[in-house]
Length: 225
Image (tube, rainbow, N blue to C red; front, side, top):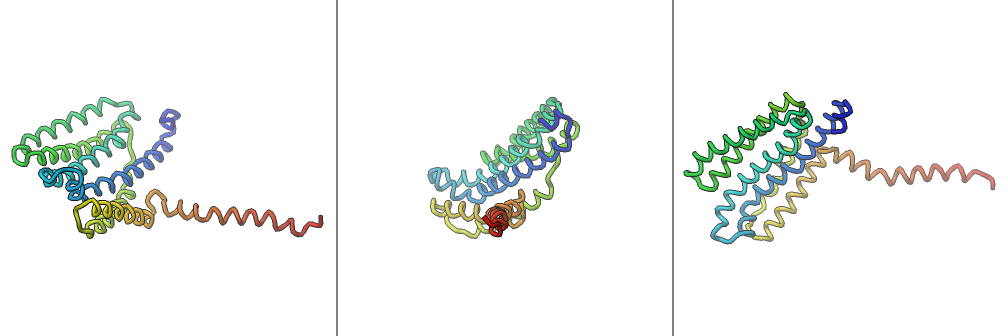
């Protein structure tokens, strides 16, 4: 906001690009992790009568949350920065119409799962709509390169979590722990959010301090008191 108000759109785009990358790097693995551990979540948090239904709902709810979060916390910023909130109203109205239309078709056939599918489709459509309509307000940079690396890291995490069997609490905790570790390692290897560069800088910081201290002390050794 400060960059836009001071007339520095390039700085605003750089900050938005960083914000979008961070959002993807956190939101994508979290929602995917919920979908992958749907069986463990359902058997741990709800009773046996509802676990099957919750297991079917969770992946769709996670996908809907991903699209809703991406739109609300990134794509919709274009309408505020460009001072065109009326465009956001149209995006929301179209999403509501899509959700209701699919709900009329899917709920009688699939029940609660149909409602979750309808909301997910509506949120995905609204993300695309917001990305296009936002160009008329304030062009939001889309971090396609970062998104590809996040998707690759999520794929590695998915393979690791999917390989772990079990549905109980211990299995759920193990899946979560392994997913976090594998995604973190993949994100580091792919240098998402400059993690590898930042880690290398942090690891080299003590050595640079020791080197600077040593350089200050070396000339004093040759001085005759």
